[in-house]
Image (tube, rainbow, N blue to C red):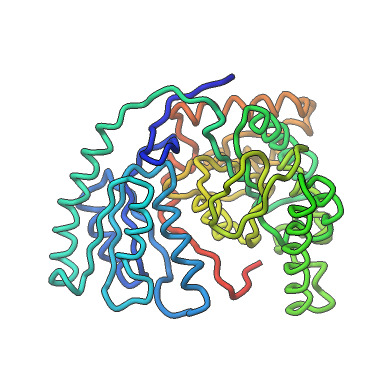
Length: 385
């Protein structure tokens, strides 16, 4: 069994990175978080645009922010609030503290305003960084890994190059005892019969059918006769014709193993193996949900190309065609488009496995090197397909 060096957390999870996160409870304090990050560059700020109002989404966003703080790649966290917001800093900090890791919170209205709060916070963050530096890496096996799967800017080649190559890596990890999370429910429309047949139980099959039916109903309610075309302009420019075509290519990322559980957006799975997370097809919201669900690593296949990453989770980019890989080589980690030029699917699958091992051992992805991942985007009940 393969192994890697990781950081053990008090709750038994294992980080492949060792971030000290600064989490705003509300967007009003993004500027204060930015001040703190400038004072302590070794910290990892997570900016977002939510935290107040939107009553229907309080539970959703609270869970997401807290579970990002619980992500195994986070060694410790400071939660910064304003004081009058709906989602309180203390609430998020308390939820994170249940994982056993060090966490503190501050409210700007209780600490003399922005500058005084930032100065106080900087001292706290420095102490948390000292704690993180004291955590020694140990050897762990792949059954401690959770990997998230994402598509973005897919093209007509995604379903025959990048996605099936990632599927081979997914099957390998599941056989090693790892957890793999497939999401983007709108990009499962048209594949209910396939995914239900892969469910590990009738209950799981029922959940698969439920979430896809709900996503399909929503698209029909909003788009009417255009529902089958709920794909981005870039998808169409890349040669795709319908959501079903995209979905058939999308689900291949999950490989061929049974589906063991269906979880809500940002929910941490209780089972291992292949998991489906109910979530949107909007890339940045989707990878935020994967991080909140506990993914220490995300693989992101793309046909059109994207620089998106995530603050506390390495994101491996797999290009589906050689043109995108060569034109965006500073953003792409793997050229699955090599399959179109004669390289075997199995060889690219092995390349992806090798990249996964290297990233687990500390090699930085292109998104990490480019630091393109300072903002998180949480799912809202206002549809963002």
